[in-house]
Image (tube, rainbow, N blue to C red; front, top):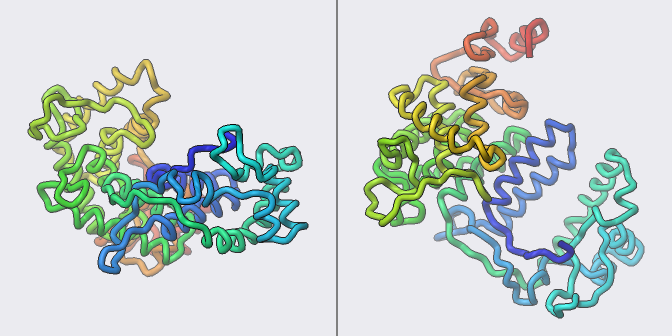
Length: 400
């Protein structure tokens, strides 16, 4: 699209934050990490909701509706770029971002153009390394453009703080924190984790205050709190993840191994079984993945027969459309192969230094009752190390 729909959904930005952070390590792309950080900054700056001057979570969406007309806040004309950056740099950026003209489109609604660097021939011809260098230049001008943009009337906002979407955002901040261990990100991990914990009373997880949760609220929250525990070592997050998983399996599962989107005894006329992932993962799939990871820690073993029943049913459903179940494929992969884990002392003062392993697809297992570090893959383990230097020495002579 040359001029897209300008709605910004929380679940999209949460998942993109995770993807860009992981891709930055996988492909050695600093610009991908910067993109993840920019998403985090956007959410904190534009989507934070406050109640009584206290952070209360993130809004569900920024609306497409805009006081100046859809696209007015985010898009730029060539004249606006020149006014903000000067003619020389403004013209250069307009060319690289393929922004042309100030006229409305044929519908007479959109008077602005969004940056679209892939449409510029000058940008397309650059090598990957040259593109990365070019994006560093762009990063240096973002603060100028942001300051100018903030003088415009802002789009309206859907300020509902939904548990499941904020759980996805907790996962996003946790993954980004593993790749870029900045204290401000850890603060956000803790704030979102506490939001979920406060909405869980042991018998019900609320979607909104006073509103009972759906399966997505339970599944996303269980997986998000587990992820938050991995990067912080906070035992409360692990315990609450296990409690939410246990409650969800009790409340949402039928005798036939179906995971319903609403509670079995909720009184709804028809129960719906969510089979596929969509704009965000199916709650059944995030719940299954949470159980798999908890079970690797010898938690909730009493549900193994039930999980086997659910997984067998899901495999039958998914056989014809595997592309529609990416999160469930993650469940199958971990069930079959298990994760590479690194057991670490939960109270270690150097815990943030261990996050590089979490950023390399290693599952951190913070344990309060151990003083050692140990790598394991299923039932194969390296000898334990008593310090980080000793751990590095062991790795020099062992598998990675």
